[in-house]
Length: 141
Image (cartoon, rainbow, N blue to C red):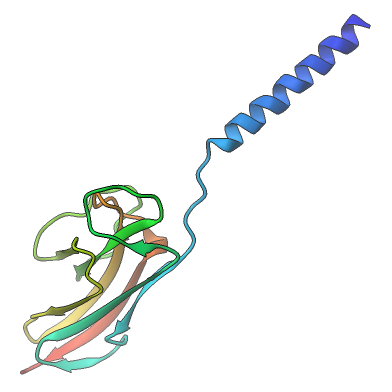
């Protein structure tokens, strides 16, 4: 009888441990980002108007970290930023920390890869799942 009780107690402890471990895991947010403007492969004269869209999250200004929210960044001729890494602040990493969803990029003529990257209030990237890349050509003005 004592052996059966110990086995039952051990089984109960294992199940409890598994439940506790499972509760601590955060699910990856589901959603995506994309440029509604310009389209991939577009040839553009003059400044480049971009319209940035996120689905599955809410756009909020930078500063506070609130689950399910963030803001846009455009990476110029760069790939996505891995999840959890801080997005740099320089000419190749444009921040839209006021919660902007539209912007005008003044780019000289040439071919560009634009990567839209969504990040939290502290500019920590949500990773590949919340990035999208297009290629455009800026023609002479």
